[in-house]
Image (cartoon, rainbow, N blue to C red; front, side, top):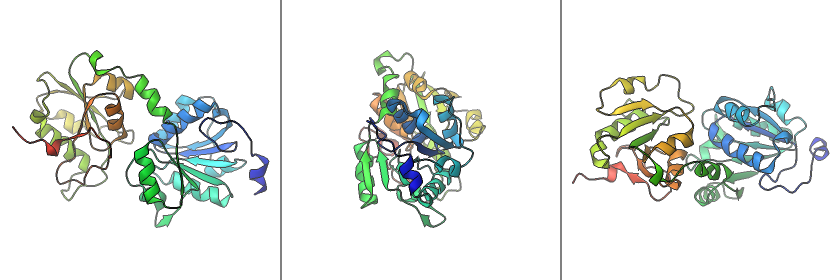
Length: 307
């Protein structure tokens, strides 16, 4: 396509080895955080045409306040030489962007920021739309993507985002007080019990707190997912748990810096906590699907037996 050839720009890129300018489409915060970290490392934020919504929009605006948002994906793709997108579950924005990129004759690249639901990330309403390249940031994701998308070009990229976060979290020896950080995330299933899974997992943790070996003065902070609506956990906070419990809505690294223990289901933040040297619990109950995080070091509450 002539449009693409016109804007093909050679450069010595550190990470984002795509022709400029690049259209970037994201909805969820996960991939957006990684992509923003790459663009900053390569110093090419000014060469990007962003189209973002949802939590990703704030990620972009915080990182590049002077670079405005395209009003539509078609506008972002017009004049672009390639598309770099996320692969979130909460929207069809990125899926539609890949379809549009192929209609424009552009190469589509998708960043996968997790270790779950790989196939379904690229399917909406029965339509499967794979990119030409899939980018991941660790060996676990690379192996999984290679198995799932045979024949697709899977590339392992530097994990700039996690490296930056870890650098901001002090070692566990410097943590004062006893605090457990609970990472909340939508389960998107009720596991046959009529209650959304995230609430079941939280209840399961409170039922087994005594088995976790926490000091009696431990405070608990519940950190909502970026996609959670305000007030989602108000009823949980109002219950009499017997612990100092409150919401935590600050910066993730600040939250981890205060915590000695971290708990949750399958969130990316659990893997970050492992790398930061925290004790990390998976709270998925026995009747829930098996935890899909492939990382070693997770303590599964369902495997802890009463003494």
